[in-house]
Image 1 (cartoon, each protein chain N blue to C red):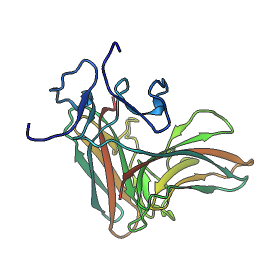
Image 2 (image 1 turned 90 degrees about the horizontal axis):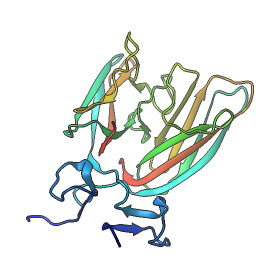
Image 3 (image 1 turned 90 degrees about the vertical axis):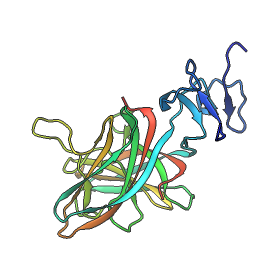
Length: 128
Length: 142
């Protein structure tokens, strides 16, 4: 064997199997490494059309992340970001820079306050 | 022990834990592996669209993520298929095409058993160069 490493297969699959889907762990393939999983609330007050919330990650580089939103005034489920698109009346997006993951809301003005519960999962793996 | 495998817990958690979140790795649970990561720069022509096609070589439809610095030089990488009202303070004049055709079928941005395809649209009157980053996982998206 010309190279060295670790390889663990799913139950029932041969160690010689080359289908990546059958591998649990292999030093040939990186896996995302968990950094933080956190939530935060953003309230867009009545009559306003946008808002944003920052989640600091302290990594010093731009990380891979996922983001979800719960429209707390109407549902308990979480929806994956980005949600909606222009020209729809509600658009939620997220971006990362070297300091924060920022979740944004753009919406048509509403007669009552709306509270968005964002959840971000930030990995230690770099975008940049 | 009637079965064999490998399991490693997070610091502070007992190896007898039955909570999957307590593990770094546990052969009882599948993992998401990075099959392919990459980045690039694409020129989005003025008032037009461009398509980025990334061959993944996996022969199945994989899970994937992509991020785009929609406003060149901003340092802000947006997750996924973002379409904001342009121009936008953070996203500039670029958005990701993720619309429907005349029959209501999704077009432009998708992943299939061969490629990850991302379509960008520029509403500005001048060409823009933007950076993108992708992760394609060695696990089925379907």
